[in-house]
Length: 242
Length: 242
Image (cartoon, rainbow over all chains, first blue to last red; front, side):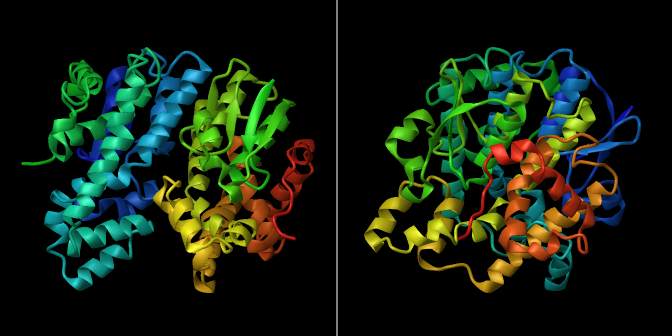
C-alpha cells in the first residue's frame, strides 16, 4: 500500500491525489497540518529532510517528493490509463506547462495563506513567530509566513498577483486550448492536473469572473470537463473558504 | 539538422550543448548575445515568445525551450547512449536533482552577471536602462539587470550566495556521491549534466577551494571525471573570466 503525506488544501498535494485517483490507486492518508508547521517538525523531517509535502512513501519504503516528479513516477509505474502524451514532443510540452504553472505558485500563496494559515499565524507572539520562522529553510516561504502573521498582503499586491494568474495562466490556457483539447495535446495529461489546483482557487475566490464562457470559453469548458471526471470527486479538492 | 539558439556562457545553454555532445548530435549554432538583449528582441521573440535561451529548433520546425525539458526530449528521441536511469525511481531522483539545481540559479547569477553583462550594463544611460528593463518580462531578471547596471551586489550578498551554493549544491552532491557513483544512481545522467555549469563556475571563481580532495573529495573526483569526458570538450564550456 502507498502512503501519502499531504494536506487537503495544499496545491501540490491536490495534484498528487488527483493523479492517484485517475489511476485508481488507493493510499494510506497521513495528513500534515501546515498551520502547525508539522512539515518542519522532527518526525516529518526524518521522512523528508526537505520539509515539504506531498511525500509519497512506496511499498518498499523509499519515498518521493515534488508533485511533478511524483506524478510522472506514478504514470511511469502504473501506465494505465496514460496521463502523459504518447510522443516525446507532447511530453516536453507537458513538462513545460507544469514548470510554468509551478513558477506562479507565489501568486497563489498570497490568496491561499490568507485563510487558515493567517488565522493561526496572526495569533503567534513575537517569540513564537521567531521560533517558527527559524524552522523554515526557504527564504520565500519565511517571507510568506512573516507577511501572513504580521503584515497581510495589500490590496495592490493581491491585484498584482491576480493579474499574473490571469495573464500567466488563464489567458495562456485559453490560447493553448484554441489549438488542442487539453493543455499538452489532445489527451488529458499531467499538465492539466498541474493546473487544476490553481484554476480551482481562481474560480472559487481569486477571479471567478475569468473562468466563465464570456471571458474564457475554452478554460470554462475545460474546467467543467475536469470537475465532471470521477477522479476529481475522489481526490477531494474541496473549498478553501468558509 | 537541429538548430540551437544559445549563449556560450549561459548555464542552461551549456547543459543542452553537453547533452547534444554526449549523443554525438551536431547542430547549427545561432548565438544570442544576452548583453545586447537579443533574447528580448522581436526577431527572437517570434521564435520563442518566452524570450529565453536555449531554444532548440527541430528538423520539422517545431521548437523547445527550458534546458531540463530539452535534454529529456533529446534523451527520449535519441536514446543512445542513455542519459537517464533505466528505472522510474532513478528518473524521479534525476528530475528532483535538476529541479533542485534550477532553484539555485539566482545565486549563480550574482557572480555570472558581474562579468560581461556588467561591463555592458553599467554603460547604459538611465533612459537606455529603463528601455531595456521594459523588455524583460521576469521580475527577478529585471531586478538582476538593475543591480548589475547600477548597484553591484555587495560582498555580503555575494557571500550569502556563495554559502547557498556550497551548502545547497556542493555539500549535497558530496552526500549523494557517498552512496552512488553519479548524482542519480550509478550511471551518468542528465542530473550530472544539470550540475556541470554550476560546478564549473564554483571551481573557476566562486569557491574553488570547495572543489578539492581536501574539502569535497567525491565532488572533486566527479568534476575530474566530467571534464575528461570527450563531450565536455565538444560542448565548449569555457572560462567566464579573463
